[in-house]
Length: 395
Picture 1 (cartoon, helix red, strand yellow):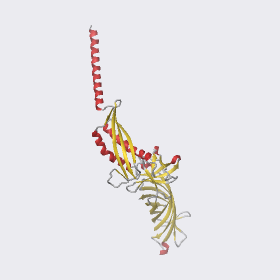
Picture 2 (cartoon, helix red, strand yellow):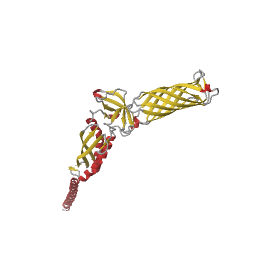
Picture 3 (cartoon, one colour):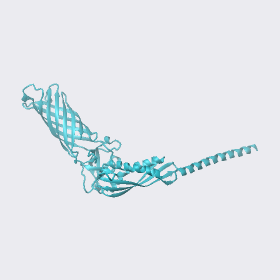
Picture 4 (cartoon, rainbow, N blue to C red):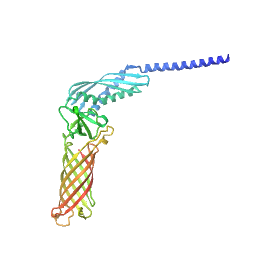
């Protein structure tokens, strides 16, 4: 009898424990359904909070594509006017993993130089919290703007990046421009006119697509980013290099003019040389003393380009290679003879390899051969090889 009572007691305890768990589960499900139903419209309060955020997110997303001046204010002078509108917003709840998802339906009324269009976006964000899901939906919307613009406005005379797969960029060639291998394209900031990135066409494929390699980029490049033929804006560069040989040093300041598209560039410079001892041999001559020369010459640059890394645009900056020649005319500042013996002329040849740090700065290493003669003598004052690190600022 006691054994039977003991079994009945255990059974009653087990049933009571199971009933408590079932009640808790029911309460949890009821709370989950009441707190986050399968699908519901987002409250008007959240919609009111989203509306002020939609305008700046849209403008910022479009400006990073560097298309045209963008505004959502009809009272300001504008090139492209964008009026986004949040048509609907829904949230849903996944009972399996407890995640919230938000779906935003956004429409655009677009007018301006890019034409008049009506565009529709659907953006989805998922997170464990509703406010985080809304934020992710807005971030997704900002990214997808580029893809939509590229697909809708492809027929216009605007070159835009079409793909950014695995570091390889391509652009769709429209009827207004057929790109050729070796041609240079740039990304221009429409507000300042500054060059923000330079790309080289390395392959002209079928279907009007051209493959691009990155020379440098100060900004992230997305699908929909506008690119323009280089050479529209002349650029200047001021370089500083230190030419070092076995017994002399030359500080060279060089000014270069031309555009990104120019393969041959003209430059002028000022060289200050210091020789601290005299060396003379059948293959090497260097005379001590201080000299100053004004130089001018031409150089040719080859830019193969490299793959693009969105997280580190500067790391994709490709090497460039250069060859050039200069002629100089100057004075030996510490002559040991008459004044006519101090007149100098020189010729130099160099090759260089360099790196674009960004659209403003570049580093390089030059190697070359330089011959300097006195005007009254056929014997060279300096006939030597040199190596020269250099830094250049471009604007």
